[in-house]
Image (tube, rainbow, N blue to C red):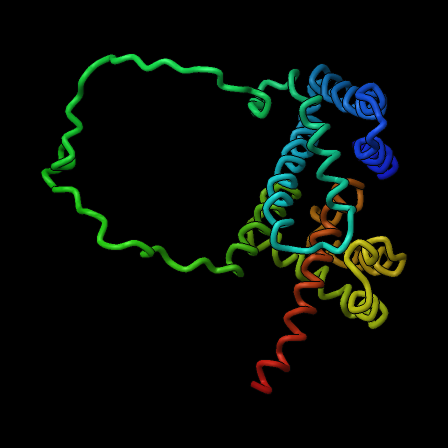
Length: 268
């Protein structure tokens, strides 16, 4: 883990404190950034590609989280402040990690355009009457709204597969990672206790439940005979375990929501 929940809370409380100074914020955030940058430097010097990849994924995940949260928070009430705190924390941490990584995205958020200059270079015939080299005339747009409708289920599955492929290493197909994840979800839901807890609690509370931890671990171990490599990655890497367990919980709640809708469809 690159940071602790206590560090997130300390920073955010200082961030929203109107009496706090910039030096107060730096006193909390700088040690975290220095720790991560030092870890990255050591990984480079020792040519530890696995650790470098983990750090790069962590930075990429923070960026994805911010983009997703900025959009979804406008239409979804998350009913708590945990995600907002994490968004503030990530937004302030990322700029401190840019500089010693060759393939970092360039941060232009603080760049202000003061002026611009236009200069004529040359004239060129765009030949819009025909597609160059084909002899075929360009077809105009017939009407708007011609795109296929957005399928939320396909979009969700595509994003899930992407996250799982980023999480697991090795030569695995999309079917491998999806089947493995669904098997873990189904095994966890075999526990009546876990099912009741999921129906009565939020995701954030369920993921810290000792019952979930026990059933999740049993399910992962139970898959060792079928998917040993994936199970070993989850059991041997704490960060990977936390990320995967969060995805499994998302699937659990998705399944429960869908099961609640079934009776409504039947009665309709």
